[in-house]
Image 1: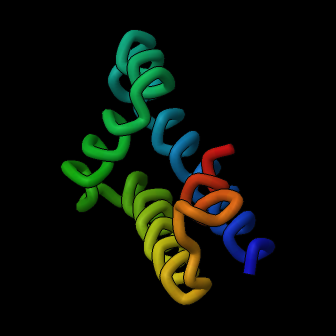
Image 2: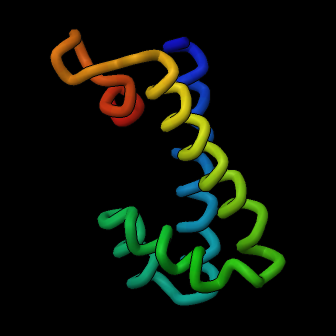
Image 3: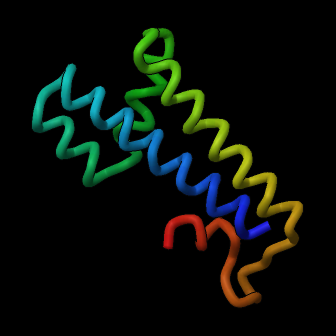
Length: 92
């Protein structure tokens, strides 16, 4: 189960960087740096521009990765009282 969560975490990370690279290309260096510092910014920007062909693929990958990690965390029965929550392990 942890292996699948790790794979989902890598997919989320790669998709996020993919969207930040698109932001660098389209919006410039300042927005790209802000996207690297605050990952919620490219996520929201990607949702806003989801209809665009170039943004649709990485955002779909990002959303599927998040959904899979949440489902696996729930099915795995992880709790914060254990060694570490499965969702927290995605970002460590």
